[in-house]
Image (tube, rainbow, N blue to C red; front, side, top):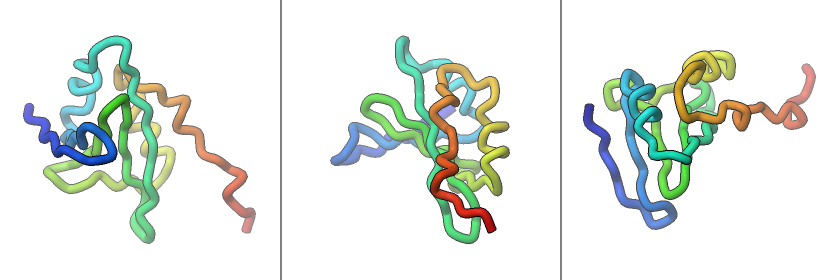
Length: 100
């Protein structure tokens, strides 16, 4: 299991974690750290999943390629049961969406 850590000026580190290692990575976070998930919209492709915790930003990748999820439900499914993650912070802000 290898995690690459890239220094950044805005945060202490950007951590790239392989999708298969997500559970073990989050389980190894020192207490009392609880990671906060968030998604970035990738136009025409879907949602890219990140985690943040004090001093670090975690990018989820699959074979070195950023993981893109087609829906919010798939992001929630990916995080279901992963330790040390506060999924309650991943609520969509429905006020930003219009009914078609």
